[in-house]
Length: 323
Image (cartoon, rainbow, N blue to C red; front, side, top):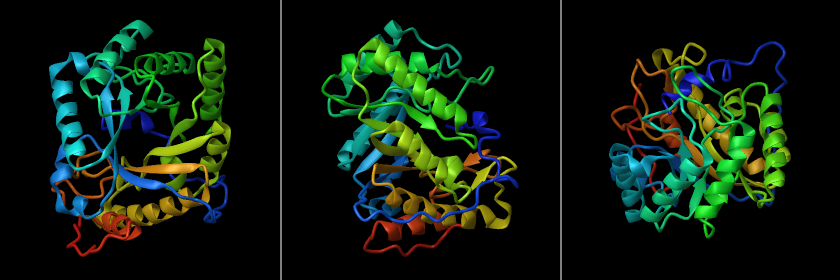
């Protein structure tokens, strides 16, 4: 995710003069969604602050070729085993290789590698074929698939895990959602061309929307999907480059406010059934992207308190971090 954050430059810039006015979302009477955490650091499962949240779902981003690279595989084994030991249902989102991040796999190579991964983790039954598929390419950093390629990866994952819940396209909203809407449309067209099953569940990362305290992007994208939606990555930015600084702890206060708003947005859309907050472990002063509920030393931040109270934990008392 830290590498991927480089591609978010401009996507999360603060709203300008032409931004739509804030319209607080209204909670939907029939809305009901589960809340969990997304992270790639297994230390979370040993933290008493995480334990008191009593969540039941987690999300893990794994390289599509994790099963054939010992380092990537060992990290996945550690995370998933601890998640299952703490009774979490794991959603795995495949992503670019950690070894060849700028080279997209052929469909045959992708299918071969994810098939090995699926066999190694028989208790994992929920997958996403590519994390933030519409992210775009960052030279010398990583590559992202076209909508057509994303559809073919989706079909390949269905083939190797036909008893799994394969969540459809996973996208980032961005400030201007026009390209995201086109990507969704092209993906659907390719799925139809492939004559494979259209997704019933879709994944959305609505950072741009909620960190502006807006909800119209989320509403429009949920409508475009036309099915059940999981906010597979969302949360309040403590720090993101120069656009969202954390001067004297200002980012902690801002992120906590965003997290409150995030829950309201999720409750206002009846199609939203899951929400995965990214992420648990925060960064340091030199970190470019930081949305952690805790700091780099796993000390709870103000945002953690918001989440703890939202989930009605028995006790949310904690000494809050100042960074």
